Amino acid sequence: MTTIRSSLVAKLAFAVVFLILLPSTLLTIYWYERDRAAAIDVEMRHIQSYSKNVANEIDSFLLGQRDIARYGAVSQELRGFLRKQGDPGTMLEFNAWLTYWSKISDHIGEVFVLDLKGNCVAATDASFVGKDYSLRPYFQDAIRGLDHVSDWTIGITSRKAGVYPSSPIKVSNSTIGGIIVIKLNLAPIDAIILRSQGLGVQTFLVNREGVLLAHYDPTLRYATLDDLSAKESDWIRQTRQFADLPQKSLGLKSLRQDIGHSRPGETLMSQEYNFGGDRKVAALTGLQANAWVVGVTSPLSVIESRGKQRFSAVAPMIVLVILFTLLASFYLIRFVVRPLNELLQKTRLLSAGDYSVEAQAIGTDEVSQLAKTFNNMARTIRLHTDELEHRVAQRTAELEKAVLEIKQLSITDALTGCFNRHHMNEQLAREIERSKRYGRALSILMCDIDHFKRVNDTWGHPAGDEVLRLVSAALRDNLRHGSDWVARFGGEEFLIVFPETSLEDASVLGEKLRMRIEDLVINLDQQVLHVTASFGLACLRPGDGDNTLEVLLARADAMLYLAKRGGRNRLAIDSSDGKEQLTSPSTNT
Image 1: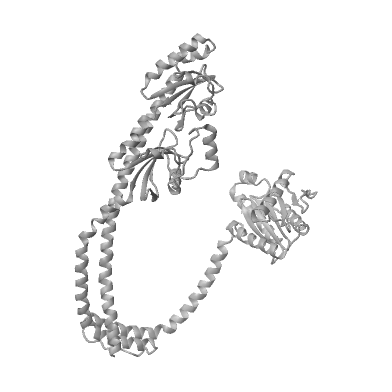
Image 2: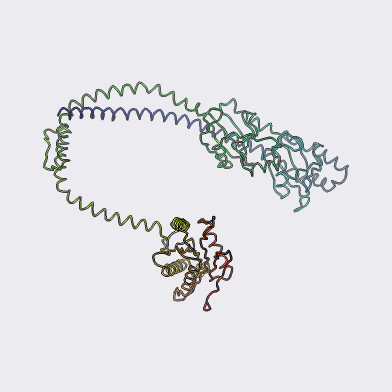
């Protein structure tokens, strides 16, 4: 008795402490995390708003300058100069006109005109004249009639960075006579990026390849967020976008991936990433003028410090909760343990199978009500034990049946009753492994109903479904029982698998299936419809190291294509010697 009482006291004391102290502690943690989350949300909204504002500023700048290029391209003076570009005196006037026209905007660095081969024929900077710029995207787009705002690019001649809007110059309604290109100074963009230094955030500008074009730390300009792919590196090298500057990788793979998911005009939050010893997040906004992304970043340590300040305010509450828990524990142990101890003994007898046991129930308090409930429970258990056992057995049998039905539905195509594509892949992969392990033959036959689209277009989709059901039934009914199986490959295509079957035997079986489908009589709206099918047969080649599921399916599909191309209603065979064979349909086709 003493042992039981001591154990119950210890457990009850632990339960009371656990049930009161733990929820209180969790509530404290919840308050802390809520304030931390609120602080993070405020900061996130701040950097998201700032990122969108910066993107709008840069967009406005770029689109405005692109419109200047469009305006220049339609100038009558510019068209006239192009028509007379062989005249040296005219070319001097051409250059002078470009110099005068470039003053239309303070942000224009240079203006130059390219001929149809990409050679500079006139420019505000004489060193540009005669240079070949045909490799530049701004020429390649404009010569195709497109207005272009190039990526951030280092000039071939000037060796200085700039952005190059370009526009085709049409000397007639449909004839392009040259290309006008404007080189924009980047000082306005740099000023927008560096302005964030005094606002408590950090801003950068990056292109879709992950190359940093502008950064709050100028030493990181032209570094990459992560390693460039070979294709991206080749593109930069071929177009000389960044001249011969090496692109150093910062190893920020997750941030590079988030950049790839950004959309023009939309802002998203990046995953947490580590940079410079800090955990950071960034708000990423895609530009609408070209494929750049504005990023505004903030260290998580700054954000989280605001939430931590709340912890000191809730610490006294934790102490009060502990004291209250101790007092409640002493009270409950004294007034609840004794009646619960007796109920515990009765419960052990009940658990041993003595359903006649009854607990003493005197009074109206909760423990007495618990004892009365215990007595009722013992009687109920005695009455319903046999019935429960019967029901459990019955439900178990029903459940096993339902599981079998669900398993069958999961591997079966609902329309045709054949295996579905997913089960086909799993089953065929096992057949291939078994064939290679034991050196046994394996053949597969791909079937496609000829002119099935014509059936749908003429008779309607319900008729097409009926054709699929009848053709699949004909395939299943004419397979060898216990070994061969058929699956719906997709649409009007089926795949028949012949385990441990050589190519010669499989070709006989395939021809038999072709004839069965040819002999089908399908009644639709009191009219008779005949269909045919084309077949492609392939066999697992022993010793071939490329015997994979994909290769085997591709060979069967190639044979199916050969049968279609050969006139349909045929069986094309991929022979073991690599020669293709194509059977002819029967004479009654």
